[in-house]
Image (cartoon, rainbow, N blue to C red; front, side, top):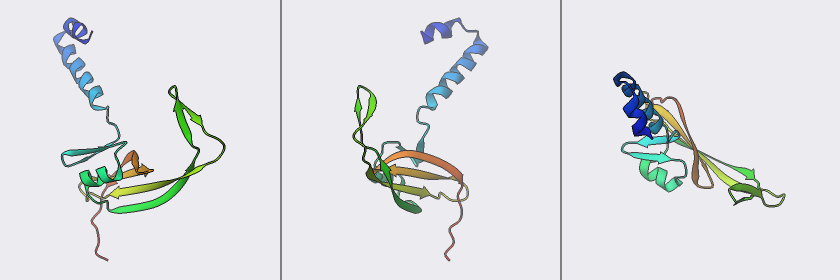
Length: 126
């Protein structure tokens, strides 16, 4: 299908088409954190992120209450009326003033989101 469409386009439109196709293909991992040559993504464990990216600058610990659910035929189904306490960690990576900081959110030991923040800062010894 793509090849037939590509063959019918004029040369200038072919370039635009290839650029558009490349841009959409690159956006698959919207929430990822590049650590050198490795990539931390959603679903990684704390150990995997630490192995790929090293120790974070700061770690915050907390818990949240969630209703237990199971997936049945592709849909979440709540189990009862109670709640379960789930551990949450937020890791901050300060990569210095020339790079953007990253905030990695973990729930129950797995990455659930990765945020890109503003530029980092120089750590003071005070």
